[in-house]
Amino acid sequence: MMTHPAARCGVFVYLTTTSWQEERKPNGMFDMGNTGWIVFLFLILGAIATDVILAQGANSVFLLKRLADLIEWVAFWR
Image 1 (cartoon, helix red, strand yellow):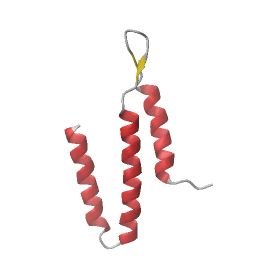
Image 2 (cartoon, rainbow, N blue to C red; image 1 turned 120 degrees about the vertical axis):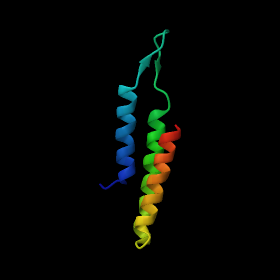
Image 3 (cartoon, rainbow, N blue to C red; image 1 turned 60 degrees about the vertical axis):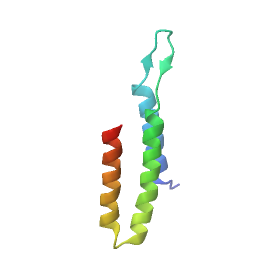
Image 4 (cartoon, one colour; image 1 turned 60 degrees about the horizontal axis):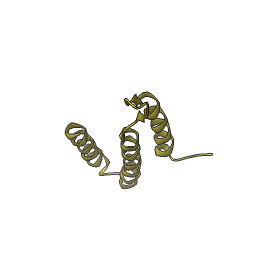
C-alpha cells in the first residue's frame, strides 16, 4: 500500500522526537514540548509544496528556492 511520503516521514519524526526529547520534570512527569508536532507540520507543508512544484514544472527551481528560504527564515527566528 502506498502512502504519502509526508505521512511516513511525519509518523517517523513524531515517534523519534517523542522518545529522545523527553525530559523529566521535578514531579516525575515528562515534558516533550511541541517539537514533534512542529516538525510534523513542516513535513506536511513541504509535501504539499513539493506536489505543487512538481505540477508546475517550469517554475520548480524558483519555487524550491523560495521554499528553502522560508524554511531557513523560520529556523533562524525560532
